[in-house]
Image (tube, rainbow, N blue to C red; front, side):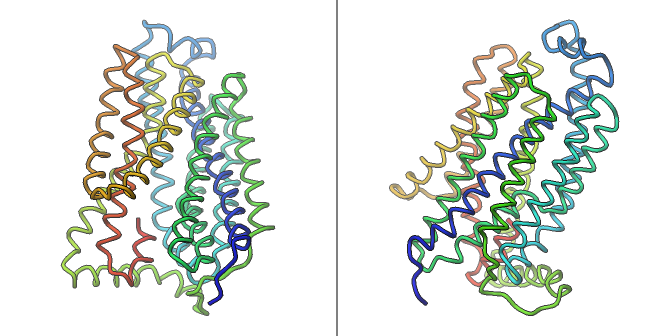
Length: 394
């Protein structure tokens, strides 16, 4: 096989980096806007706009505020579950299509689905303060689930870019560059959200910017990505591609059982599942808690901008730590888990001392170590010929 030149690699990597950056930037604009949309809608269903504007500052309204927060968290939970349950079923199908049909196809389908979801939520924001807004929010999340979400897009982007790599060094560098673009997208997304809220702009404008970023990502996907099939491409029927993940999972279980690693694999996988479930809802929980502490949407976006920037620095430090000192990944994962528990505790103490929030940021930034290192530990348990199957699962 002829080794691809550096310009050829960059032609494959650069569009992927731009797509990942735009998608993550739009995704966190979406999170920022929908958290505010749900909270304000639930409040407006119970009172008028002037009442909701001062509810966070008025200490005499704490009982009503707690009731509003409880209902807001319930709607957020409904939206998360409606997305996650469908995405769990759809994700293996998209992964199989990526491996057997075309790397470009899942990227385009996921972005198109996200655009449709964004348009539905944008329409929902026009009906802010009504029950229809909350219903459309759930509908949007259900539709979003059929796109597989960010994990499908990111894994497909990794697969597309690394297909051009012929050496392990190129593979590692490519992944590092894409991860950098993802982290930059997260930070810029929250920074933009902070800027927009500072201007007191309406939520539907934030969602419109979210959709425009996705349209730009779709344009790059259609124009600059090639219709590249993976090395495992086949002429299997659609039915075979859909049921293939079931057989692949069975083969993985058999391989782990033969090596007496099945129980360890399942325990660690369950740990990762519950941790990711916790991380999925933590943003909404923190949003509601910051409101409880009289912070507004601008402060919320600014807090997460700092937290995500700190997380990027923590990942850079982790790469240096693993390369120079070669510390056991399981030990680092345990440290990350402990710090993930410390963060919410510091938030609880911040109710009486707001300065404790600045202690929650370092805890959150190093908490990412748990999922990153635990994935590495789980991957080492999997037989070499089943690595691709395991990547689709976790």
